Length: 67
Length: 228
Image 1 (cartoon, rainbow over the protein chains, first blue to last red):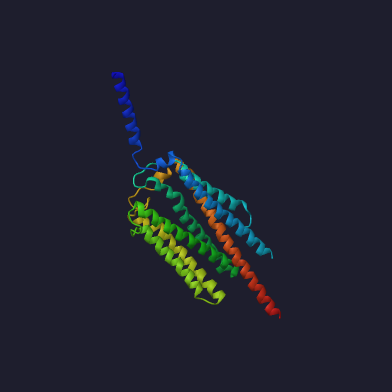
Image 2: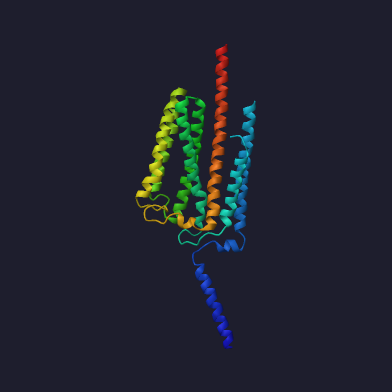
């Protein structure tokens, strides 16, 4: 019985110390459930679109320069 | 200007920043929290603006010594793109300030300095529109551009550092070094700066090329009129 109590106390202590380390509020939940990847995907898509558009413009201007 | 590698490199670097900037670990700091990641996006806007304005400064001097209107086109389009990036930098800075400093505009010395610098460059755009004669327009705006760049240096780099400011690295506030020392942040921040500078130069080069096409067309039209 006593061994059980000590085990629980140690566990609780360990938990609180790790929580104290993570006291500054960050988007940890978003990271742990993977939702952050949704945000990354959306931003990456938008940027890929802008990048592709810049390439398109560049080629169009090259054509105009030649004509 | 027409080679592709640096444009692709710029795109890849900024693409990496979008992914790495959100996923890589950052230091846990109070007040800033996750917004510390804005460093990867807000600060490169200013670096890009400074590089573009420096390019415009160079071409303005070149125009004054050569008298070639093509140099004037370079200077104008570099300045216009620089103004565009300064607006982005100002807006992102105000959004960030709203949630960390408590208000979007707190009359911070660096905010005031940059606002003044932006007004000086806005005046450049207006000044150009007010002059009809091309040669005169190019000459006056080149002189003004040199003055504007010379004003930007103290407004952005010197004055804000002499007084207390909310910006890191100014007055009694901790410098960026403190965060930069974080290895993980460096690995995203430096590529972000280089990537955005390359992208900014690319956009400016596209605008310049359009300007040059227009200029050549007008020259041709003038020539054919003359031959008639």
